[in-house]
Each structure stands twice: as structure tokens, then as C-alpha cells.
Image (cartoon, rainbow over all chains, first blue to last red; front, side, top):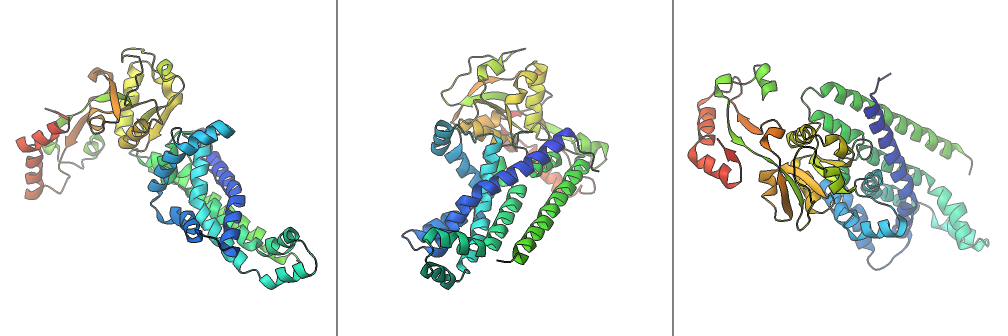
Amino acid sequence: MFDLTPAELEALHLSVKVGLVSMLASLPVGFALAYLLARRDFPGKSLVNGVVLLPLVLPPVVTGLILLMLFGSQGPLGKFFEQTFGITFAFRWTGAALAAAVMGLPLMVRAMRLSIEAVDKRLEFASRTLGAKRWWTFVTITLPLSLPGIMAGAILSFAKSFGEFGATITFVSNIPGETQTLPIAIYSILQTPGGDGPAWRLALVSVVVSMIAIVGAEWVERRIRTKPA
Amino acid sequence: MDYLATRKLIEPASRVSVLGNSLVLVVPKGDTLGVAIGPNFDLAGALKGRRLSLADPTGVPAGRYAQAALTSLGVWKNVESLVVRGDNVRAALTFVERKEAAAGIVYATDAALTDRVDIAGTFPATSHPPISYPLAIIVNNDSAEARAFRDFLLSAPAKAIYRRYGFAVR
């Protein structure tokens, strides 16, 4: 339909991979943070909240630079992950996924937190008085009731990841087949005189993928809502 | 500029080029590569799998010159897989400053701005197209102000500023 070149297909494939991996990897982290912020009071809570939301407000290039300092091959966390898990972030697609996850986390946590806060605590108390253990109450009451927020958070995170540009290019640069996602490929093409044609083709591809993601998410959400509890 | 000239978007008579630059191979401060720039020099071997940082050769001029230089010296094919592409030449320099890349190719003027890299060699001027910074007045904008600004950019005080930042002045 679009007659994509192999290089363009590679950028598309990489974008989807980065979007999905960053979204899936940030789900547990995002939910834990959202639950903590919604239900617990602890010293430094506003600090944690601030750090999570920071990438939303900071210029993405700054976020990328901070990631480069922390998770680059010379950064303390970069060295730790390399030695402990054998995961390298610098100039790898994993780094692109990390940047995308960090950029998407505030949106994810925000949506999840609102949804957890909206769960009626009395239902949880009722479950507990009827003899359910704490974790069982969580699994059967809190989790299902906050599912729409979890879904919304996941979609927002994927959406942000799919379009992420500034932090990614600053952190892991622009390597075709490794870190060159769709937005970076489009940017790269636009730097060339006469690159409007191919750039528009890739832009159209981005629109199609985004639409599929949005429509798909709507469909899943409807399924969740209509399913009897 | 040629792209604009062929589309008749600049005043041809106003076009001049007084500035030049050179390309250098830089390494993080204190590091050495142990190779000298020359035909078929073993850059890939010296990098030992580490990264070479350039500006994006797809569109950024510094990257295109760097790719041209490496190609004419016969080493581009060997190092292509090690290249990381900054979205501009300063981004490419930053990766070397932060030791994320083992080496980089940037303009001499950019390398001169930081004390966190060492210059490991200068590419021969014949290895890449001449690096020049043409100046021309855009069609339908040939005003007295534009002329005055052009004259200033070509004046002795302006040339002194270019030289201070390491540009070659013709």
C-alpha cells in the first residue's frame, strides 16, 4: 500500500517494538508508583511525585541528557545495568525504549493514580470484613475496578513512546536499524533538500499506526466495560 | 546554496565564500587511538568495536563531509556499522566529550571550543569536498540593509572574529 523501502520498514518495526516494550516494562513500575501515590502517605511523597512528573515538564533534550549521564556507558546506572544484568542502553534500541518509558511514565502514573483513587474504599473494607486477605482484596477488588485507568495509562504510554523524539535522539542518537525510530527517520529525511516526499510517506505511516492503536484501545476498553464484573 | 542557485532564489552576483574549515578526528581527553589518518588507515581496528560519532550524514553537512573523507580514504565500509549519528555536529562532539564514543569527526572550530577532547588528526583537505560557507543575498531582498550587512560580514573586523574562532579566512 505504501511501498516502504526496507529502511523505512525497519524504522516502523523499531518504533512499534520500542513503543510496546517501553509500555510493557513501565506497567509494573507505573502501577506500583500510582498505587503508592494514591493510597499511601510517606515522607518524601511529593518528591517522588515530582520526580515522576518531571519528564512531562522538562524539555525532552534535558531528560535525554540526564539519561545519558545516568545510563550512558560511563554513567553510574549504565555501568550497574551492564555489569548486573548485561543490559546496555547506550546507542542501543534498549536505550530508546528506556527514554520512551521515562517520557511516558508521568502520563501512565497520572491516569492510573486517578483511577485507583476513584475505587470506593468501602468495597475494599467490605471484602476484608468478609474474610479476604489483603492481597486477595487487591486482586479481586482494587485491580479490576482500576482497570480502565490502567488501560488508559498503557495507551498514553504507548502513544508517548511511539512519538518520542527529543530524549531519544539526545540519549541514543540516530542509528538506522538500532535507534532510528519513525520520528527520528522523518527528522533525518527532512534535513535533506527534496526530502518532503519520503517524509510525508513516513508521516502517513505514523498516522495510520496511531489510528490503529487508538481504535484498538477503544475496542479493548469497551470489552472491559461491558464484561460483567 | 547550489540548490538555491539552480532554482534562481539568490542574487548570483552577491554570492561569495570567504570562510573555510577543516575536519578533525577527536578522541576523549587523554585517550589515544594509535592510528594516523591516511589512505586505508585502520580506524575500525583502532576503535575495537567502540563507537565513532559523526553528525548525521543523511543531511547534516559535517556528517556528509566526514562520510566523504572516510569514503575517499577507503575506510567508510569498515567503520559504517560503528557510526552513531548526532542530529548536529555539536551533538556528535558531546558523545565524544562524555566518552560514550571512542572517537568522532567534527569541524576543527568545534573541537577548539572544548577542552574535553584531544585532536587525534586532521583530515587532508583533498579527502573531502571543500568546506566553505557561502554567503548570498536572497532574490527580491536586495535592499540597502542587506548590502550593508553583507559588507560587514566581509569586512576586516568580521574576519578577525572568524579567525579568533579558528575558521580559515580567504
